Each structure stands twice: as structure tokens, then as C-alpha cells.
Length: 185
Image: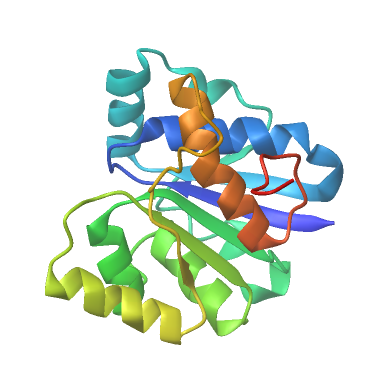
């Protein structure tokens, strides 16, 4: 049973966080704990983009981004997967630099040092050289960069179906089996 932390940052793309949460709840038999740490900016972006405050309605554990007493702030809690979705370039830069100045970056540092799954769904475009170097650093440290680049071969008809092409890929990368469109299947 997985122990999962989802960090939601203030990057545009709240639809990805929503769809990922919905998908994780649809496979709750595969995880023992699901915790969320969400920045204030992420809440503002969610409310702006999705026109609701439904982020507070999910039946999961919530932690303030300054709560260093959260279980996933330590490797001994054995959280084995961390998603950051969407992941701002600022958050990615602090993770790449080992700057554990809040619960998101501390949890990412813990996941990397424990050699567990860290998957960053970066949302900004285009990338500058600093972004690319930070992606390289995180990749070399064992993290996975999964850009919010949807695919179209499944012929998605809604924004949620389009977002699912990315979130399903994230779940695949984490080793969480999920029913999804498969090329050639």
C-alpha cells in the first residue's frame, strides 16, 4: 500500500491537480495514506481556474506548507510517492537547489534522499536554461520530470479528459495501475 503526498503549487493548471486527486480516489485500494500540501497561491489559482473551492472537500489529509511536523517531512514515515502537480518553476528550482524552506521542498528532499518516487508535473513554457539545468539536476538525483504536455491520440473531448492524458502518465510513472487509454491496445 502506497503512502502518497501531493503538493499543489501556484502554477497555472489546477485542472491537473483536480484530475489527479479524482484518479487517486478512484484507486484508493492502492494507497494507505494520501496527504495534500497546498500553497495559498495554489488555492487562488484553483478558485480562479476552476471557479470553486472544491480542493477542501477531498477526503484526504491536509497539511499547511509550514507544518514541518507533517509525517512526510521525515523519511521514517515511509511515504513512497510524491507528486507535485502542477509544479511551479520556483518550486522546482528550490527542490533542485536542496532548499527545504517549506513543507513541499522538505518533503521532496526527503523523497529524493530516501530514493523514492518524486514526480514533478511542470507547467510553465517555454523553458529557459535555468529551468533545463534544474530539470537535469532533479533527474540526476532520481526525480522524474513529467511536463504538463497532453496527448491527443485518445481523442479527448473535455478539459478533464485532456488533463487525464498527463495525470494517467504520472500514475504510470509512480507504478500505480490505472485504467487508461493505451496506444495500440
